[in-house]
View 1 (cartoon, chains in turn cyan, green):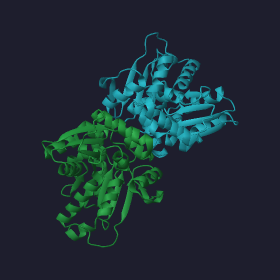
View 2 (cartoon, helix red, strand yellow; view 1 turned 180 degrees about the horizontal axis):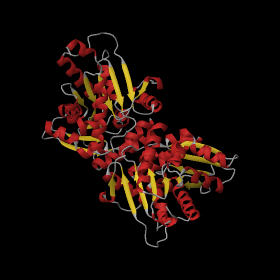
View 3 (cartoon, chains in turn orange, red; view 1 turned 90 degrees about the vertical axis):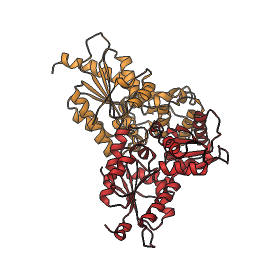
View 4 (cartoon, chains in turn green, blue; view 1 turned 120 degrees about the vertical axis):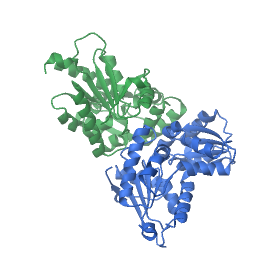
Length: 275
Length: 275
């Protein structure tokens, strides 16, 4: 396959559900000419409370599906799958680039706040594996890392209750559990693709000097850099195509996905597939 | 198989996760001598946001597993699976009794409040299918039924945040969405096995004259009546055995399951299986 054929292929973006659409949106904003294909494994979401063995099996199946469609780069837009299965997926994709969301988030936090303290808000599986802790500590030995599982924040985002008193109380409680009311952190890493929807509510609670790291936009930057350095940016100036694949529930994908994407989706935009 | 062999077989109890342990507990309280085997399909939970096709497939696989173990009666301790797949599971179990949680809950509400108004709190899938509405209206043509999907209440129960201000605010908001602040209902049906954990918080908000229908205990009564009328109650006076099967995550099953069961579980109590 030569570089010119390659560059027309879509970027594959994989998530356990609709949360990764925040990453798709960031890539779309940064690289509007790229063709994108998104796969949400909605039949088996959420990954965040499942075992590493199951998460790896699911991620491998989704990756095989995208590889078979023909993609030039894979984005693992799910923190949990990035934390558990990134090495396995890199082996599976052979020489094609595979970009997870953990490394870009960790890099952004460490670059902006060297030697700083970082609070990672994530799913139970991501926290249990210490994925951000390892990534941050390997980049900055002086960094201090705290991690907090926040399952109710996932539900808040899916329900669309992203502002108001209930969101604020839940965020406050998790921050309290993480730090015993001491919000003195240099950065808060939104370590789940659902959490960018809660960014304003988090911002209203924490001090202005705390950096909020949204891995969606930092991941989009890494995707852009990778395509540039490989010479596989799409040449056309036309808007790229968008495809949405899901393993279950087109109606719910369209409704909840619209919240994450920030634009309306209809059932007919979503292709149901089997893994 | 004669009646005496049959009565030694366990009762099979199936749920998408750990919520059905509230039903197991109620059966245990009512029938302490019965052997019980519980299957939680934790690899694919939650069912409440999935499509009917996926829910049916999952429920059929779980039922096949329990049937293969040898059971004398199947309890579908998941409102969503009861709403979607009960007829299919009855066909699958052949002549063995299959008891869902929707019918007992509907019967209890209608018997206690004939001609009354009922508010059903449930998952998205159960509400979308109108399972309780159909069951109640077929029993009592004069009944008025409102249904409200409450996904965040599922997350609250799993997180163990079952009392306090956050639980109260979330419950209040769903009641408000259901009835525009008019809590004038004769019964509230806890139409998801997670919700009995929130019973006290709901009770603190609604008037004392509102009946709270917990399908766990009403289902246990139906199980007891069925075994009695079939002559298949276990003859022994010894405590029955308990087995827990799960499709994923023994650690989480033990931790969260303990909340639902009201007793400690350890990893080694849980057998991991594949479906």
